[in-house]
Image 1 (cartoon, rainbow, N blue to C red):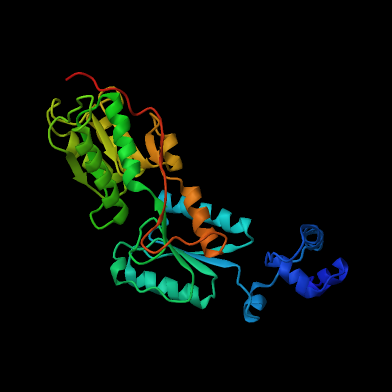
Image 2: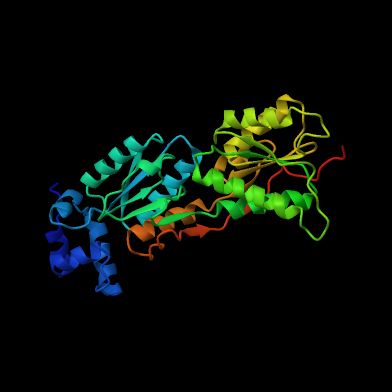
Length: 339
């Protein structure tokens, strides 16, 4: 069977090929009634536009490029999946490339996507993004790891951590340890500032809340093993000195910390509360189920796609769109035991 072309669609619909093209490109000049009729014919005929031919005619490619540092990170995997769904809702496909958190590879991936004539790029920059120069003339929206001088969309990491610390304070914890992310990471530093803000503010509360001793902080990568090592570090002290709660900067860290507590014979949440950050699906699969501060990953991805496709106004430079986080209460937080 020969491939159906745009002329066959136009002939059967009784319209011009230009009208079919405008419908395929979501042009606002087409009435809803006509759009529905032609779309039904396209579906019945099984017509699929040739993206390469449209690109050669100077039309949109209906492709969005996505560059992320690490596809094995569950957060980035969910971000890509959410972006793919958002793009599909607008009739677009995605091309995903990994920078391996390296600026030179990142620049190469962006160059490759530009040569593919994508209609825009959603970029989660590498941690050494300071050496990166983005091409001009192509819509690019920076996500999660915000870059000075570029439009950005992210979760409100700082206030998300404040929300988590407040949850632990309300339970009665006064020795709250914190596993920060790597020092060169923009989100990690925002989360650390949120923790320090909350600890400082706890000393000024009208209810007389006072923290027991200085902040207990361990820096670690965002992965499971690093969280486990940081948990061992924070818990390797006398019972009346170790934290009664640990807030980890990622769910992977938190799950690693849970393992450290298990190995040390510290029951969760009876003797230790643990709180994660991200809200990845894995957080709901642990035993006990992890309490976490969830990033609105689907909202972030949808907003990034909408900005790239001019469906939403781009954020002003150095004034990013920040989405509020929320606490997903699981089974790993409870009031502390007396020393």
